[in-house]
Image 1 (cartoon, rainbow, N blue to C red):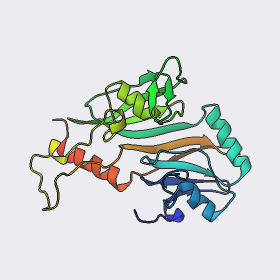
Image 2: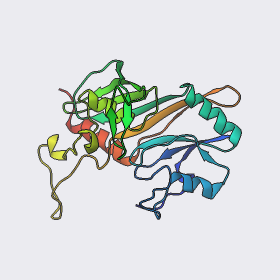
Image 3: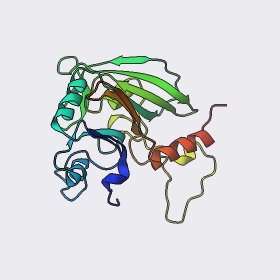
Length: 242
């Protein structure tokens, strides 16, 4: 993966806060198993040691992240997260053709020692997510996912619990779909054996809304990265509902 320059992923900045559009396949924090890999926290600190991540995204997940430039802003954002006053919307592609309207999934989640998340009434922490269909296809659906809480893998596990596994989310029952699933004739290069529609979990942090230090509400949207955009275009072209 090519090196990422911090300035190239900034999508909003004022005197107190920066918003970036995190590319897929880069960790929020340092990864112990790969000390040479770039991380968002490393990119931030290289610009200014005072910068702090306000929250995290999974390594494969793309989308909007907030970075505080000073301690006062960090505490202000952290308090909003704690009080669940920040609105986050993720876009996900799931392997089911469904038309959802405010589907509420309220299931407690527990993270085991291997960082796999399970639904557990005894050990789990309260977790709630709302799902709405943005576009329904023959084999898939593009969903808007609104987590009220911020548990690890929350959207992925809550979606899977409703038989709506995310595309490529093999950890929670998803599959890596081939282009041939939606396109009748696929031309392969001589060294190709398959053409997957996506090579990562199909999840993108699309927007976030919060209040700044003056009390003004700010909403930031992050455009799709190339792989997510290509997936949507392929579905629009070959998997439209008739």
